[in-house]
Length: 331
Image (tube, rainbow, N blue to C red; front, side, top):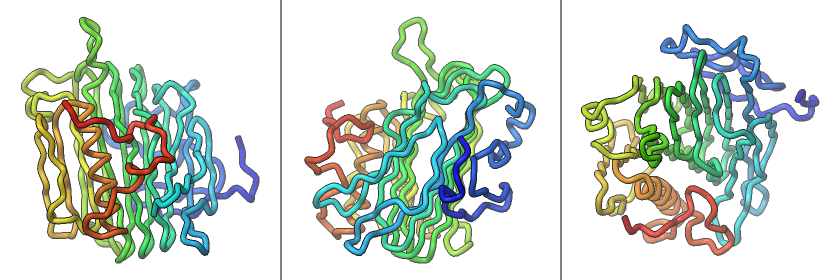
């Protein structure tokens, strides 16, 4: 699908190692290939799909966050922001029109949160990474957050299938007073399948995330996981559990933040750059709940102060059919 000139997206700020963005169709030329996958570029992969979105978030005179310039390209579809009654933030989520990330697929999402915007950006369901035979699948995100904009990005849990190869990349550009929460949830794979279990039998996962504030690097995380894992590797990386989650918080975090639960290993790591990292290992349902609930609680603190309700979770206008819905915390 080739967009008309009027559909051009907001111009993002590229990292030094990525191609300059375009205002038209998202192409393979905009996708960054890490060195770990340099020998399996998917340029000639006939069935692979390149899609994504360029999204600008602005505000109305009444302070409601809405879409500015926007471009979307299948297999991703962008739902218009939902402005729920009595909620300080709008909800914007992506739907993947295929069965997940297939071999050679690439999703590119660029977000520009304008001054004063308040939004949660998420996927409707978990991302499933299918087996890779000659290439790899990737999701690549970038976000520019202006002063006094608050943005929560929760892409959703990731489920690596057997023999899958996956690259997740994130680049964040923060203004001095911009705030952002980024969340990740990693599952062991399709583990509940008896003798067909795909517990930690992926081929390779590469995560590469950087955040800068006013051009200064304030956070960087990069890892490469080579599978399949034996029990020692599972113990080392996941503490012997089936899920791991993390939040990168660029903004204040309340001292009395409740982020733990029975049966879960949790850690809070404040950095001298003003970033706070929160980590979990435990059962998938509980880890997923903690990541979403904690992210939205911190965002509620930003807009309402101590004791304020979390974004979205207390709303009666949101049906509990999203992965980030608030389930019971009973293990």
